[in-house]
Image (cartoon, rainbow, N blue to C red; front, side, top):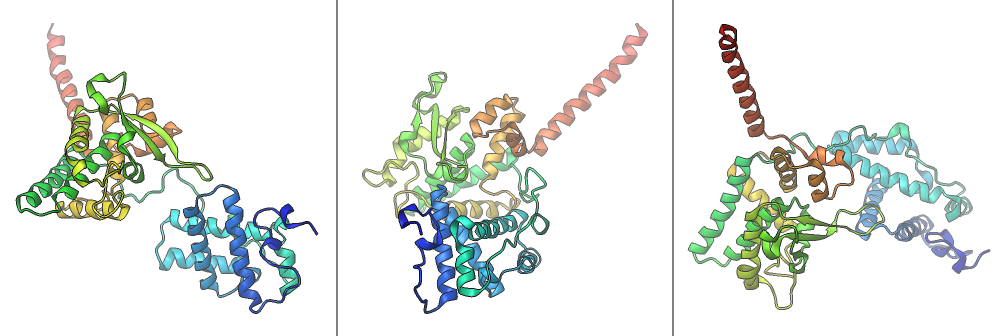
Length: 375
């Protein structure tokens, strides 16, 4: 038998000693499988958060079927998938994430290189099989699978949202409340997220040092670029970086105001976070979500307008303004133009203006036709 140093990450013999009797063999082998699967995924450079989510989904399946991996069948998978979709109402993308986790685990324990099949044969007289197949999983049929209510803000909706956020700062400050500064931070964060088309975590993880000059946009001063260091990563890859150029003058103005006048009142000494928290290094994702939802609901806006709608709005409004689609694609950090097009939600006010222009042109042509004939 090969030594431990010759075993690949996740191999059974790295997690179970040969010839040792187990007090609770089924439970202990299953836990060893999970540990091995984690190590195998770590070796593939997957993020710890991804690994833990997959482990949680696998445990959910284990608890549902009440059986160990070497006892699982495709029928167990079918019943669980049906429960997730029909009873729990999981979205298509969520259901597929559960299916992918189960498929990945089964591939791992069935691979002869990791020796789990032989271990199970020795201890239990059977072995695990793949229970997820092309014929019993949800297929990815569309390029975009977000819920249909998800959309971009119209210009008027966005202005109402920003105005309401500013009003909360004024009210809190006039009443002498301490919460006016965090409210100001959140209002500015929302505007900057829209102004640069950022994702939620991209915005949250910004530092002051990520802001810089753009030599091709000297009118923006020291606020002509934002360097995004925590962009959306591909599986097994580090966060994707990109630089986003300032487009609108007002974006640079409010960013400069926040950095120079108000952020120093909230940030702890030595902190570089652009959006510091009153209780920690930087604002948390839950705080961003709750504040955004509170403002949206208070205005009675469509529930489909979520935080990511600010990014959708950025793309949509740039395209409506006639910006080059390739420029918008680079600003958003999309690898393919088709991805950027999925974010483009032509707003109702834009459609109204376009229709009005078309009708006016048609009417003008119709009125001019008799004049030409008479001549």
